[in-house]
Length: 298
Image: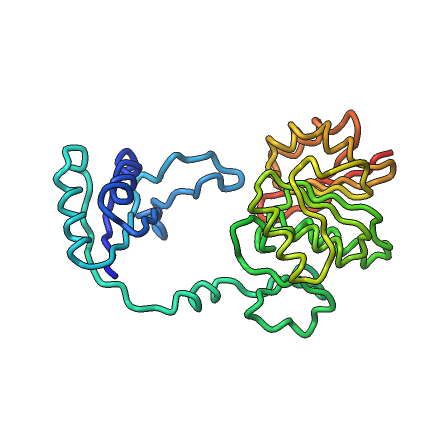
């Protein structure tokens, strides 16, 4: 396998990437900030507290090809294009053979939620301190426990149980992704757990992950959420959370709890305002620029 590396100014990145993948036979294309690690480095897309950038001023594009001939042919074809005058060829070089499974697995270690509750990939030993754990590997659906929003939801449930909460009769995980929040609720005393998502792949992932962790979770599309729940969890993003306010509030039973994540610190007030007519929400946790909003129905 051979790697073709190019430097491209912002206006040329999309066209170069599309040409490599759609016309020149690249197996994959990755784009990085060419100035990473220098004073010219720019924030990543959507980084908390920073404006969203369309592209870096200079990007490094790495394209993989089956062999050297394919890589050099692609480089020559690109550099001959009239719009590609600003592209700079850095190298065409062989890629060392790797055990890519091991390389990928090395990026995911057990995640400590609380001192005695951990998220553990299947290829790792369970930490000795873990009284409860979820076995979960990276997959197609969002939610491995590494992202701040997921960790805050998990931590909220774990700490509620540690403080003496007996568990929840009915729990709804709305936008379940991998099902990690639903599984956590089941492990922490929930008697009945429904998990719903608009993505059928997420529904399948939730079913598989629940079975692997030996807990009962009913997973389905959003219309599978029926009635009132003692705990409603939604780790999505601020805009859909605001749109979903009437629906999610309607699913919270009297005295029930609502836990929302996927919200940047600067978005907390506007999300809370969308729910204020029904449920008063407060920031109960924050991590890496994200906040957790929680409240109870009167």
